[in-house]
Length: 180
Image (cartoon, rainbow, N blue to C red; front, side):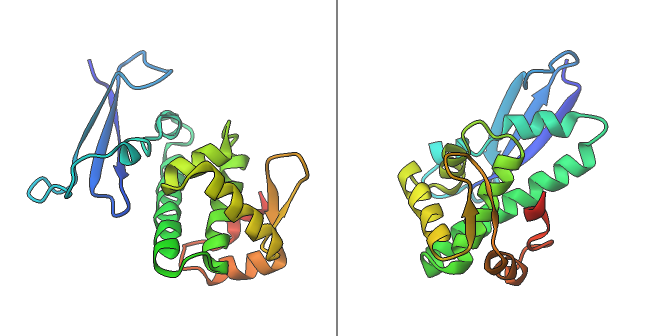
């Protein structure tokens, strides 16, 4: 018996919909996942890809089910999905600009703050870039004075320059979660 369903949108434009279904006693994960085109009348060209499937965030779905935080977890998940989409679009349209590096840095810091086990791998999977590319781009963010990193540790913080760029990005809340 299915008692709860969480919906996630996958792909750069949210062209796929994943419905994660949870049973009455499933606390460790969903009992099923169904992925279908968001617009069944016009399915995405090329079909479902492994990149889109890797966007399914089971951990976020489990957190969204928690009664105390369901609204805020779902809101944070949606905001993060928008940030991932924005970072992809910035890279594809402008290349490695300060705005793109700021967006990538914010996603990285958010993943670290959330306790993501492998934040660089997570970021690579979500942005469709390789691990080494993400690592190189974060290094560039550090060199350009956007991201301040802790030596030998995951995490860091946006610099003043990074915070100013974050405020100019088109995301709701700009750089608000950088100081967590």
